[in-house]
Image 1 (cartoon, rainbow, N blue to C red):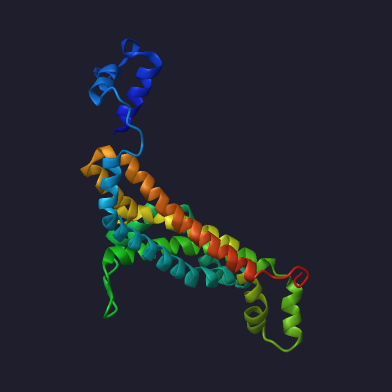
Image 2: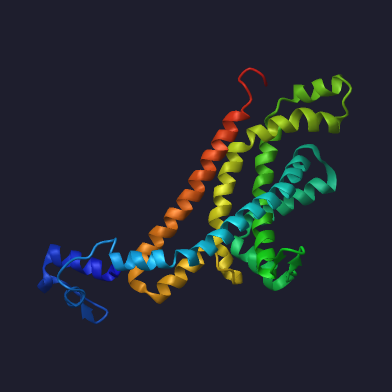
Length: 272
């Protein structure tokens, strides 16, 4: 049943058909009469059957959503962690370039980044032999990954800065170079402390994958929209089904990262 019909029936119950105003040239009372006298609530069998019948179509969107999320997060880590380290330990022009790039990426809407990647820069299709990534998928990973890198750099900048400077000095005192002290003393602690922030960033990237519709990729939300275009009476059911999928993905990932964070948490009293 459509949302308009549900609202109309609710209005009839509370105000009566005679007292309902006209909307867009027709009264809500007439709308209510057209949908029938018996209310149909969320969970109509035919609508849910439509969703179940098309679950495989949505499943392809789930795979694309998960793939984009994982690839973008990994790319963001590979770029964001060194960028965060440069902001903490670097100096000169390299530090300024990294800082400015991060500010620009964080201040630019993700849809603009994706459009620039796909339509302006025109990233090529990547072929890895058994796996081939279209230019749209490549642009999606690069766009989401660079945006994530800009935020991850701040997560790692904060966690690297949170490790007491005395520990870096202690590493130097036993003969480690500055780079080795950062690598073997500071970085392991910073990575442990970054898990909560990384967890939040994963959830953000997962939801941001819905923006790739702008470059023609049919991820989960786009495929759901395609379904309501075919059968509008199942709009709410499709949206609820998609929401449940997003909830399962975020809940499962968050609980896994919670366990990881607890396992690798720095015991109290062992770090300054």
